Image 1 (cartoon, rainbow, N blue to C red):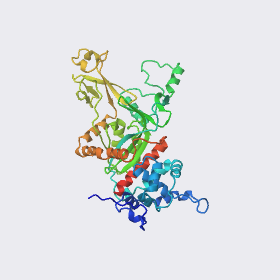
Image 2 (tube, rainbow, N blue to C red):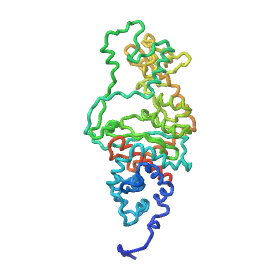
Image 3 (cartoon, helix red, strand yellow):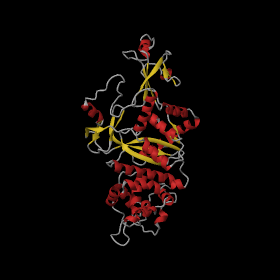
Image 4 (tube, helix red, strand yellow):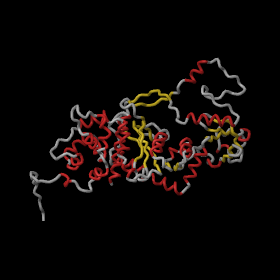
Length: 461
């Protein structure tokens, strides 16, 4: 039997707005889980008590921005339009059905000019009820990075020269390199020279221009966007080239975001690791294991983690060897004699330690000249095989040992359901595939608000 409902759109009913919001609604759960009165404590010293115009409730402004990120709305304008016609949103903000909600321009202006980086840093602390409720489990910290497409045209770009950024471990590495060189009877590096002066050759001190050139900053060519100069050119494969930002993020095994650092898209994961790691370990000193992919398996990172008494659980990293040549494991390092044994059981002796921290081991060309497998070992014209081993290689081997431990192997398998799931939810459910903001500061605040919204959703549920 076909029935047709009567559309009585002019019906008048007396009903409370609270009864229209389901008890299991997400906004009701967030309102119960979070004490938004802490916002007043943050901003109370900034306002005069007995003078000035009445201000808009800052909790309302913050909740409007929070609604945008919780439900993945594309813009504040769209969020303001949805709030105007939604009973659930009005209840969450404390507005009646006929009360005028704030205009989107007011929210946008306050977010752009008053939501500073310092304010963004305070939000995870003031709304970190997850730690008080015992929901966090930071003993295992999962770290990774994801790219966010920038609001920039790839066709509007310029080539510029920028100074080469020095490594954070440069001073520590140089000290250990010089100590290693002295232990092998080599002369330490001089900061003014690219390479040590030969022992038997008199140094030429007459060329002052050469010394000036050596002291100059090293430059490299980068592609910068004319639309958003803070973004970086992200290259993946042969065809994918776009300006982007990268969110280097850490989370626990439950998916709660612990820290995030935003950098241009051309910054490697291992370069931003130190900042993320230092912030996480300072806030959560009980962290025991750092779980990361093979991009973070560098000598410096392995040394930093293991020297702090923690364990780096990472993946297998394939050695970069000659195509079609001997397998890497056929070259054996002899720690006792400090040499390398080749597949033909010949010795590669120590020659030097370079500025990058690698010891160089070279073979005897007279022996390699008649080697039956030389074509699988080296294509050098002078018949010399050169092997490199980092002075911090022992820490990488500790990471390899942890990879074979069942405990850390199981932790690494959980990356797909922790940090990778965080990135998937952020992009699929919270509109983080691309940003409409420009500038590193604005994008940083925008990403942090999304991660705060994701933490609140997880805490409320």
